[in-house]
Amino acid sequence: MVIPGGIDPHTHLQLPFMGTVAIDDFYGGTRAALAGGTTMIIDFVIGQKGTLPLDSWRQWRDWADPNVCCDYGLSVAITSWSPQIAEQMAELTKPEYGINSFKFFLAYKDAFMVNDGEFYEGLKQCAKIGALGRVHAEAGHVIAIKQKDLLSKGVTGPEGHTQSRPEELEAEATNRACVIAAQANCPLYVVHVMSKNAARAIAYHRQKGHVVFGEPIAAGLVLDGSGYYDPDWTKAAALVMSPPLSRDPSTPAALMDLLACGQLHLTGTDNCTFTCAQKRLGVEDFTKIPNGVNGIEDRMSLIWDRGVGTGKLDPMRFVAVTSTAAAKIFNCYPQKGRITRGSDADVVIWDPSRTRVISASTHHQATDYNVYEGMTVRGVAETTICKGKIVWENGQLNVEKGSGSFVPLKPFNSFVFGANAMKEQAMQPTCVPRELPIDNVPHPGNSGVEPINVDAPSGANFARRGQQPAGGASSITFD
Ligand code: URP
Ligand code: ZN
Ligand code: ZN
Image 1 (tube, helix red, strand yellow):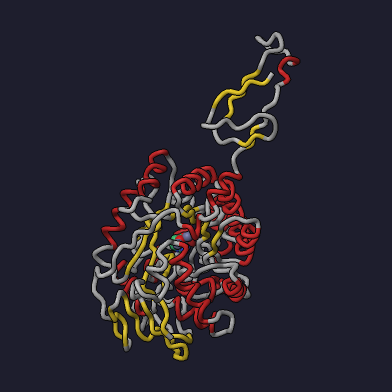
Image 2: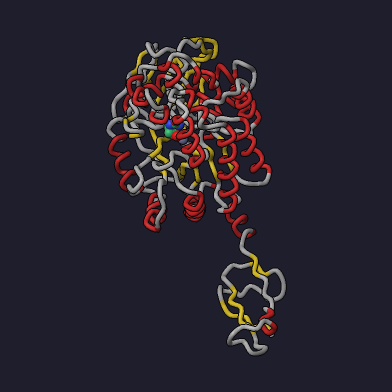
């Protein structure tokens, strides 16, 4: 089969995180992506709290540009709030910066987390500047307390990670994020949907007419969380990621069903890899185990195997959820995500009948552990062509450091924002012009009946009497 190259909309290459740096960098990570049939990634710029988004964006460009072997876009995380950050968000949507999405963490208290007010302000700004809001939905405050409780009871191993983050907390935060996004009239993209109830929350808000996209990731579509109880610390710690893998063994298949029927929309990996030695930073305290798993190389095969191989996805839907939907949501379609005249020649020759065994001993990633170790998967990228050049063939990579380009992503994407302006109009606040009963209320300085001036805010809807004045605010007198 000849298919468009995969697009992984969620990676963290060389992310400085939890006292260390993710081991797969922009060179190794994108090489591995190509070996698995992925020809574009969207990585997250995540500055430490207090760092300005523009500075972090520059840092990511400096890291990525000389090293990437495939094209990449960026999505910027907003980890605190101020008028200056709001201004920089607007700046970042200009063509020279190419950002059309911003991510907010509702987890990682004292690190990346924003509070609900900051999240709401951030989403309002996103809506104004035509950027998609993205959210890591977990209840960070509750998690922090649960972590302390578990540690105080002597639960220090990776099983504490899953127990401190019950699925209900993901579902609650997903619902909350959707509610807040609707209030801000901002299209929302929920990253790493890991549980059935989080997916149900997304479906519920979509049914109410909100624009919400749900991204399950390879790990959540394939693995469950039983491994957190593995007696082998290294194996259990390798699975530590947030939100955690679901402890309900039926979740991976259920998420695939939702992906098949369109209630979830595209797949990423959240690739954020740490070696076994790095994971050991948390050997005495599960809250210090760096969070993240691999996937950038194996996503396409895993989804083919568990999706197409089970009869849940047809090959067209496979292409949609691994490539085309991402191109449409991030506004680079049909440059990416499609094979047609004028599109980038990012093409994969896919062998649906071949199988391969996933292993850290053969993968191309820098990490020494693969959470899919030993799995035999159907569906293999036989040849990967990136921008017209064969970069993967006969099991050999032929890539050049820095040959990939930054893909600027434009705001006000009609695929995402098509209904937004009309929604905004419909959401204008309602102002009821009325006579206030102040004549009957004894209070100092009010001695009798007087005409009342009502200042009509620009754009307000009037529920009865009076009309919205043309040209904005003015004063209307009612007697
Ligand atoms: O555990 C995870 N997911 N690590 C990467 C950072 C994030 O939350 O996306
Ligand atoms: Zn996350
Ligand atoms: Zn992530």
